[in-house]
Length: 431
Image 1: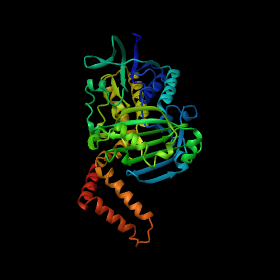
Image 2 (image 1 turned 45 degrees about the vertical axis):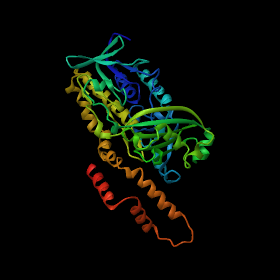
Image 3 (image 1 turned 120 degrees about the vertical axis):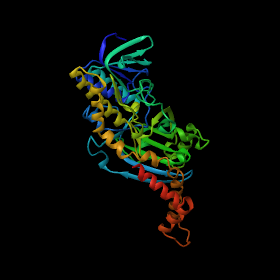
Image 4 (image 1 turned 135 degrees about the vertical axis):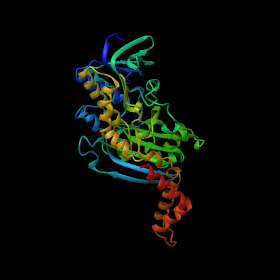
């Protein structure tokens, strides 16, 4: 590695790091990205859905050239029991009526490689296959990084090294992760022909499906399942909160197998070939796990900053990562103008962050981690939905009690009035 001093060193070549690199390089700053994988995207894992609005700010019209898989035009949410599934579907051109409102399924190996090329085109240098061991500090200020015997120096270091950012922990910016703060995600990419996907999911080649499921995918534990359609593959996975994995005796890989063989999922995957398997830690606690975002000579972005929310009906992290990278870059550009990279100068990042959609959305959803710790969401609710739906749609000639009585009877069977009141009170207090 070069011994020259850079304006910025970015640790991690994911969406946050590469977004920061593009903005910095376009502004004429000297920036280098250090990526642990053999190439950008090789170690990056997500379910596979990108909300495009944040990247539009950096690369307008990116979807016209980026290797996206499909534009999401159909949403589906399911409450699953072992043998049943209550599904809610939605499709509308409102989901993608503008470039800012559109979302896409992506495969990170392809997409991040393309974004890395855009960073290099802008003037950033990318060095793959290097693990950064620690940040170099002088008088409490971060001045560079150390990788093996190599040292590299910069005015500022941007940490984009993922959810378990040991570098941020060593600097005291971030606490060690707790089991309740993260989930273990396991994912398969299953090969099917484009024509088969179109036929089975009722879409055209330009259209895609995002399908979220709760209940049986995690055997009643905290978490859920997801399915995204790509061009000629399907991304299928489960996420189970780390602190709750012991709730059942089923391991995460076995959860994924069960999910793939669920009666509501298996027909869509029939004849498919697993071409990729991956696992990943996912930040789960939203605003409650956002660390100190800046220090003397250092900024924290993306998953390293815990920027992810799981609302059950959608999971967001990639748009947060991209925006945080952009805001960090704008902060560095401003600091460079004044030649000041102190914590006071870099606190501008926190100002931008607090006024961004990231903080707005994290704050508005701050009660969801509390809501999702209620086991009723993953056990009683799917069972109740299955029970009520079965009675509503089954005709035997016996007297029909009506939907109101079905609901009342199911509530009485699966929960108590006290538990229901307590759950509502906890959730309202959390929000």
